[in-house]
Image 1 (spheres, helix red, strand yellow):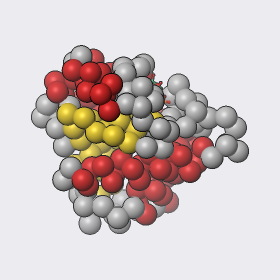
Image 2 (cartoon, helix red, strand yellow; image 1 turned 180 degrees about the vertical axis):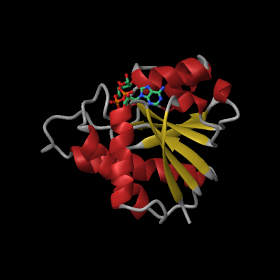
Image 3 (cartoon, protein in one colour; image 1 turned 45 degrees about the vertical axis):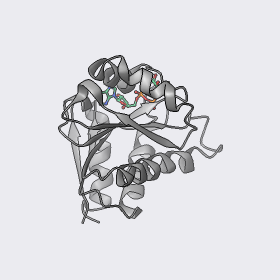
Image 4 (cartoon, protein in one colour; image 1 turned 90 degrees about the vertical axis):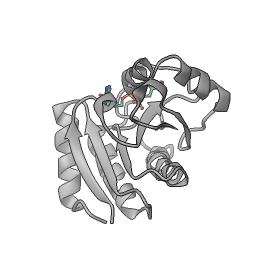
Length: 171
Ligand code: AR6
């Protein structure tokens, strides 16, 4: 049984086993949520990322979480850059959520927090992204027990809540 929750706040404050970051292919520190996670984890995170880079859009790769302890792992996933929606963006975004859960399962993660992947710098419309996030997470078989979808702004929070209502929180 996997529970899905929506939260509002800074994902670097989450007390979970793994935090997902919305990275770029280099896995070096970027802006947005990735910048916040790298600042909280410390410079070792970029070194560990560089060692396993590149990460293709739609894929996910894990490193230790370093200074983000008690979080154990950062799962780096690379979202699609929004280009109008006709270039496979939806499938790539769904793949980010699926692959992140697959990596989490390999690591024995029980509690995981996701940001709203691709909805910032990469420009994915947040309502569509919220629906894809919830649908994909509900459709994916996983041993993860708790998934927290962490919004950084009120609008994203409301959109995720609405998506969850359409898809009640347990799978
Ligand atoms: N906690 C939770 N969510 C956050 C936080 C935070 N501390 N900070 C921002 N967000 P973005 P992307 C939200 O731009 O669109 C980076 O430079 C933010 O409000 O971080 O996938 C990477 O290196 C938005 O809702 O990621 C890539 O180059 C969401 O996180 C590129 O940006 C995602 O916004 C990836 O762009």
